Image (tube, rainbow, N blue to C red; front, top):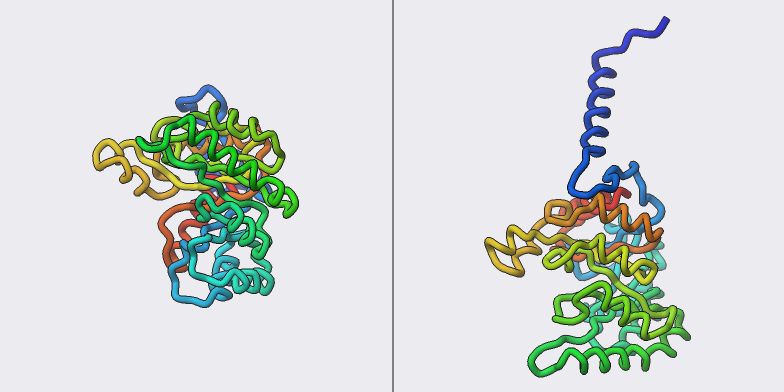
Length: 289
């Protein structure tokens, strides 16, 4: 004879069924949009940019705070006014890795030096800017040469050069970015894919599937096409992770298809401990960590 089910247990079970049905409900895409609980736990490591931490703390205490909040690492910035050796010391004392370096502009050599001090595995590269003075074809050739010149030092140091898709009127499609990377013909060059940056004119999941194994790391933020339309182009970024037009279920599916394992770093408005805790929770939800 089966035991009677308590009202509390019944409500809990019913709620789980309803939630599961909602997740499994068909949407815009034909593929299943249901992600398993903790699908990317242990496969995606979450981080923030060091410059996002605004609380008035020592470098060491900032690292301790990030670790307490559940972040797996941090990314150093070449523009930050902090001694790289102090970052390295905080890394060693807390065990919180500095996984990458950004904010070095076209000075790849300086980025590699900072990465070596920090023990980082990558330098984020912003590949030039196309405008009236700088033609598309010339920027293409020039920036590839920058990277080729830096490759021997990057390979010797074991540090990857990852090109990010940014709003610089350049590398406007995933097919072109894939070609740009492939022409450099090196395992030490890849893509630092920014999920939110393509929502304005495309779909991140399509970029992920096309770039595939070229993607070394992810930047995580959102974009709202509605805010863009009603408030202006750059206002589209003023939306919290998980509340914009990024289709996270399909993004996760695309990441699973390419078997992505690596770092995902928030690139949003920073703040104090409370703000960073909210960012951590949002990343857990959208990436199913």
